[in-house]
Image (tube, rainbow, N blue to C red; front, side, top):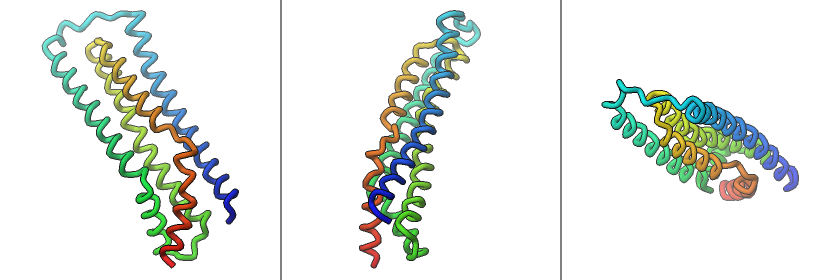
Length: 179
């Protein structure tokens, strides 16, 4: 398979990921937008019966957001390295050395797609954490902060084609090293 066909595969993969990313981002923005609309227009009072628990719920929500942010950093560091795509390639070649470059590329893409969704999920959950806290106690200040953090996380992990352009090269290098 020539270089242009592999590059087209990378471009197609990137486009599919972008569509999934956009769906997740839109759902996140709609959930936040509905809550923001409620906070600005309805302006609900703080639930009097919840005042004793507000500090604890706020702290719990903060801890959840921090843990999710750390999970994002760890997953990104683990799955977006040359080592990860190379290990997938080597594993596939050890099971079936007759695989073509395109088949190997598809195997790597399937694994990367799963990992990208796994990285986007905590960003969405950070926003959901803030929205759920808002609907429980009607304090919106953390909801805005968590939306910014979750949206920033998704924007940082936007599936640009540049992230995947070296994968065909990694596949060829792994094939040469295993021969």
